[in-house]
Amino acid sequence: MAKILVLYHSFYGHIETMAQAVAKGAREVAMQVDVKRVPETMPDEAFRAAGGKANQAAPVAQPAELANYDGIIFGTPTRFGNMTGQMRTFLDQTGSLWMQGALVGKVGSVFTSSATQHGGQESTILTFIPTLLHQGMVVVGLPYSEQRQMGLDEIKGGSPYGASTIAGGQGERQPSEQELGMAAFQGKHVATIATKLFG
Ligand SMILES: Cc1cc2nc3c(=O)[nH]c(=O)nc-3n(C[C@H](O)[C@H](O)[C@H](O)COP(=O)(O)O)c2cc1C
Image (tube, rainbow, N blue to C red; front, side, top):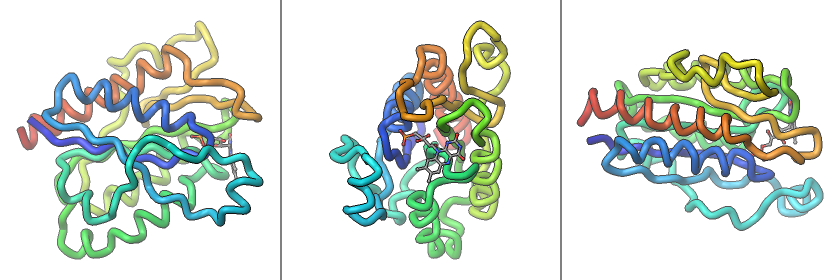
């Protein structure tokens, strides 16, 4: 059975909540599921001024740790339609893993959040994927067998590229039951594929 890492950056807590749902789904299948976050790189003053959420529960990951897992599910809020600088800075420290081919053949997957419904969820995941491919990872999304992404019953995140949530302009909206369900599905789906590859 596979070892899965859910690795996230969250500034206001939405992705942190989604990460726990992803991990819950992965735990249905995987032998080991760890939830870790990337270091916060924003200067303290700017972090406080922007109302960042401190004291997040997950331990901070080291780049070298990625090699210990069979599947890695990355969570990042959108920043202008891309991953956050904090996640980018972490990934930019994985050059030696790339040189060793340490992540080649491992499963990679991405989930995200944005303030607005069309604020760049798909572009954030799609612009994340080249990094996974450069690392030689097998990219997995959120297949349409997770049918909650099809429904028009409520405004919600979720696409074939990955689970997502809509936080609202002031961060006032929390991930809905359906969004958390899609996140759990993605976690289980990645863990299932990683188990087939490595279990
Ligand atoms: C500098 C900056 C840029 C952002 N860019 C976007 C954007 O392009 N589209 C959008 O919908 N939300 C944007 N947001 C809102 C964040 O994506 C939102 O706060 C985040 O998804 C909430 O997740 P978190 O609670 O895990 O931090 C931006 C926020 C900041 C601070």
